[in-house]
Length: 265
Image (spheres, rainbow, N blue to C red):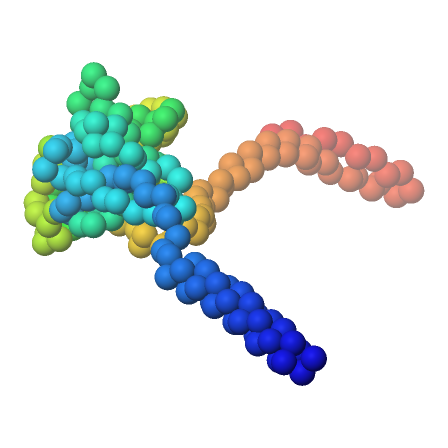
């Protein structure tokens, strides 16, 4: 009886040991396995792409990354982004996003940069009007117009506020930061602003005022008071007609009789 009980205990120990070894083996096997990660392909910049540049093959490369980390709006193939034009500068290694590019279509590069329902208007400038040559594509400016009234008094007003510089001369990319004297500046304006800009240019002269890129406050200048007109002098009073001379008379007293006679002139 004792031998039979000992035998059962040994057998039970062996069975439990085998079960524990099997469970430990499964746990070690699961812990050593790397979970399968689904990968996806995205397009990234192989070098810096300036503002207003048409994308070429040399500008881009393909990257592999986990699909769950792919940002929405990215490109999956190089063919999707080729010949598109950048509307913002792109740094090297950056994942390309669709909202930072526009289709060039059949127009020129500058036409692709013009926003929807906007117009590009070019104005002739010199070193003064062009803010000393410090204007670069992407800057924002105000446009001031001045003219003379009645050939004497000069007036000035801001006709367009906070508009974007699309290009200086024929350059639409801001690759340099040093001042450059240019002959023309292309601005992005609405159709109404375009009419006001051309009208002001014909009536007098214009001046560009460079804005801080973070300044979106609209400052309304107080109107210059009109000069006071000289007081209107009242006309002198009309001269009064001369009074007719009174007739002279002579009083004659004779005793108790009194009479008056007009004197002869």
